Length: 200
Ligand SMILES: Cc1cc2nc3c(=O)[nH]c(=O)nc-3n(C[C@H](O)[C@H](O)[C@H](O)COP(=O)(O)O)c2cc1C
Image 1 (cartoon, rainbow, N blue to C red):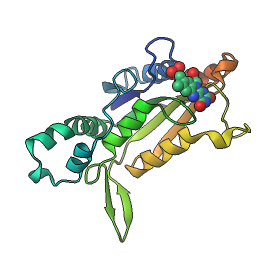
Image 2 (image 1 turned 30 degrees about the horizontal axis):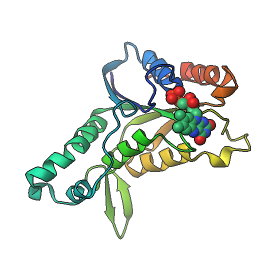
Image 3 (image 1 turned 30 degrees about the vertical axis):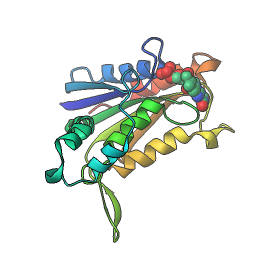
Image 4 (image 1 turned 120 degrees about the horizontal axis):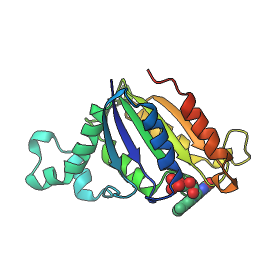
C-alpha cells in the first residue's frame, strides 16, 4: 500500500484545473493507498527564505540555536513529509512560464544540504530522496507541448525535472492539460492519460 503526498500549488481553491487533475489521480489510488497527506502551497505558501533560515540550513544540527531551530521547523516538516511518501503527486499551474510562486517557495524550503542533497567537489551534487515515484500534473492557459511553437517557453516542466532530480527524485511522469483557455480538450486529454496510468 502506497503512502501518498499530494502537493497542490494553485492559489485558486475553486475551479482550479490542476486541483482537478490531482484529485483524479488520487481517486485512482482508491484502495491502494495506506495514507494520503495533503500539502497546500497554493493556499498556504511556505515562507520565502530569509538570511537567518539560509544560515540555519548551513549550520550543523548540533550547533543550532533555539532561534535557528525555529527557522528550520517548516523545512523539517516538509522534508519529513517527502521522506515518508512512496508516491508524490504535484499539481502545478503554469505561472509566467514557470511554476507558481508557492511551489518555488516550497522547493526553496526542501532543497537542503545534508537533508535532501549532498555535495562534494569530486562527485558534484547527489540527491538523497530515493525510491519514490513522482507525478507532475500541470495546467496551462496556452499550449507548450513538444509540437507547439511555444514549447521552448515552457520553463515549468524543465525546472521541475531539474529540481526534483537534484533532490533525488528521478522517476517522474509529467501530464499536462494544455491550452485550457481554448476549451475542454486539453483537460480531457490529461484526464484520459491519468485514467490510463497503471497503479501497482
Ligand atoms: C498569475 C498567472 C500567470 C499565468 N501565466 C501563464 C503562462 O505563462 N502561460 C500559460 O499558458 N498560462 C498562464 N496562466 C494560466 C494558467 O496556467 C491556467 O489558468 C492554469 O489552469 C492555472 O491552473 P489552476 O486552474 O490549477 O490554477 C497564468 C495564470 C495566472 C493566474
